Amino acid sequence: MTSTLPSSDFDTHVGSDPHPSLFNDDLAPLPEEKRRWGAFEFFNVWTNDVQSLAGYTLAASLFITAGINGWFVFAAIILAGVFVNFLVNLTGKPSVKYGVPYAVMARSSIGVRGAQLPALVRGIVAIFWYGAQTYFASTAVALALDAILSDPKLPVFLGMDVIDWVSYVFVAALQVVLFLKGITWIERFLNFAGPAVYIVMIGLLVAIWVQAGDRLLPAVGSIFSNATVEGWGAVAAFFGVIGTMIAYFSAVIINFGDFARYSKSEKSMKRGNFLGLPVSLAFFTFLSLFTTAGAYIVLQGGEGEPLTNPAEIVGLVGNVFLTIIAAITFVIATIGINLVANFIPPAYDLSNLAPQRISFQTGGYLTAALGFIVGGLWVATISQIGLPMFVDTLGAILAPLYGVLVADYYIVQRRSIKVADLFSMSKSGRYFYQRGWNTRALIAIGVAAVFSISAVWIPALTALSGFAWVIGAVIGAVLYIAAMWSYRSKPGESVDEELAPQVPVVA
Image (cartoon, rainbow, N blue to C red; front, side, top):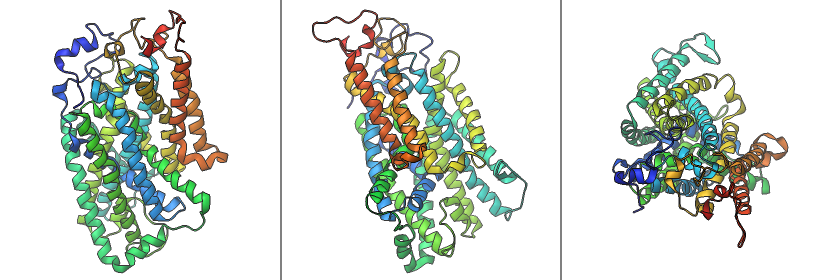
């Protein structure tokens, strides 16, 4: 079992007098007796992330837009799950060991003050995702209300009618209520939501398969095939799907330490990650592929574009009771992962900006308010760029942060963190660098971000858009290692006293 931080050693690790601008109870190392998460809890984190309406919509969209056979898309998504499993094990390990969230771990590489910048960037990205997922969850509520009220024609504002707005406000308020109940209640919520969604998804597929009969399997093989992409183009499309799926999970990948700190052991974390990522992702993708294909044949009559939102598919079934049950289940799943992946992390990140003035709860309120604006503009503005590009862009922004974080812990720090210095403004502190900022890390992140974001938005680099996350992470890690390596003192030479704290492994 990985060593953890007992409460009796709290002052020894944090220091007797942590700097107030860097410390509050929410950011402090979590003592061992408060770590309750086993493999099942981690499994449900990923299961709810995969099962969300946005997750289904993205997977179904990739089957339609990738330009390659659906079975290749299926394989690419599974490979992405395997790779994400590897990535989160890397970011989770230090937080299991030291019990600190991502916002605090980032101080090791970017400085005790500098870490506020990447934490803020991560928080902003999560707020965008929070707003988007809130909107997707509200579509299920709107679907149920439309079914009950026989789809009335109502005025539209910003692309949504009155029922859409009522549904959106309801979901936004419900998430705040759940947040206020605390992490323990959210854990129970997730443990119920994961299995419940699978039951509904399986039931929906069975209902469609019964109606489709022997037409379903041919539909799966034909609807998602595209002969226009061949040769190396097909290879690029295959890896592009992998990259886009990695980007979808990018927000959780980088701040996985926020969850890993609750783990009872590293072994439990890894087992839960494996079951929740490649295993659960494979099963859910299978359900998504067959459900979308079956709905196209049975419910759409083979006309138009296949539906990618499961809430819309349920709406075509014509059964009000089934629509309501499915809507409730999809809302539960989407809200669950939205709280864990897109609400709690920015609450930590915003609290990290000013720990004495912004508590974890206040950070949550700010997240809810800003996310509400984003979600309200989703239909009219943000969705116009397309979900895959939206996902790739947010992933490209976060990727360099991940590369620097992992390179710092495993290579520069050599897997050893001085926890007290994460909360210290002492000039002799290992992570003080230059007035609390490691400018080399910031430059590495900035340069890498230019390349990764360009891969998404510059037309000449379109072929690389699906690789944006990998490009950003690798460039960020390489530049950071090179910058820190070049600044180490060579044998026989002294290190300038003012800059000595910038060489963590020389201490």
